[in-house]
Image 1 (cartoon, rainbow, N blue to C red):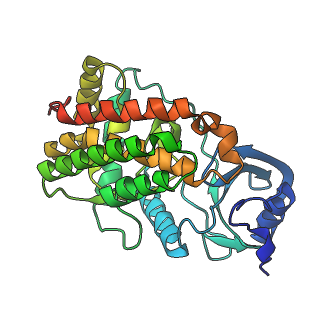
Image 2 (cartoon, rainbow, N blue to C red):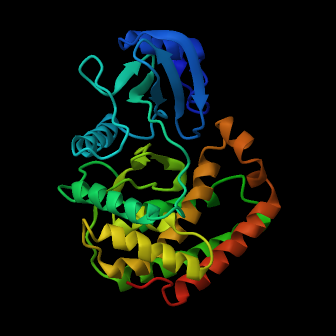
Image 3 (cartoon, rainbow, N blue to C red):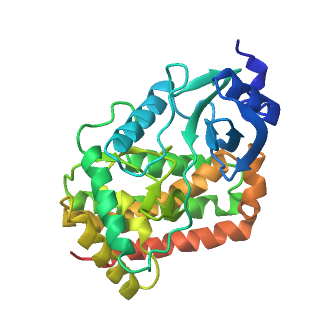
Length: 332
């Protein structure tokens, strides 16, 4: 039975109390013992659950963000990766399905993966990461997604820009400047994609940053494929680079050395790193602005309601235009 009142458009998780989470777990056939811990997540709501099955993770999907078909493709891709013995958290099948509906909410159950924060400067850590990502991409290249989104300029760039321009968070005094700067940046992004040419797109993790990576005795383990999408391989690689240019060049050489042991990499994709970084910058601000009615977002990002944030953000966008105009930092 679905209680429509459980889900509010402005506060979509308002009715998701601990009691509802435990009842949902029991209805799915689990045996929770009452121990429930909220885990860090803004887009969805994620909990560690304890019971007879040991520790598990329940992820409650944000209503209306993805369709059932899109979530099913996420689950199928993750299961496909797990079937090749890749270290991912694949959803469990409960009652014949991996996506469970309960009182207006949709959730999935995952095994609890143990691990620590990655230390990529450890000897051979980046080579191992490169090898593992290459194996992920080899699976991702087998066939395309049918309904999942693309890593593209329209969704992450122009639509994001429109969301910010429509948001009350953007100070009116900065609206014209944001419109001009973001428009100029997106023109550079489009030119960058055009210069790179027609590159192959595969199924990707899509949000492959250190927060979605654990490290255990066997190496990296990937969690949260909530943003999996079609896109160029470099999307899952560039966020693993940090620091001044010499450090990034060294890090890239180590990752590429491992990656090329299992998969080919089209070096033209290196020209997309700064355009992809620009899209991430535009999309992140739009994401927070679009979710501002969710009480979790003002608590997590209070500075975004201040004019000085937007002034600094506009300066960051201007600097990103320069970064795109500069010669590519990395080479094969």
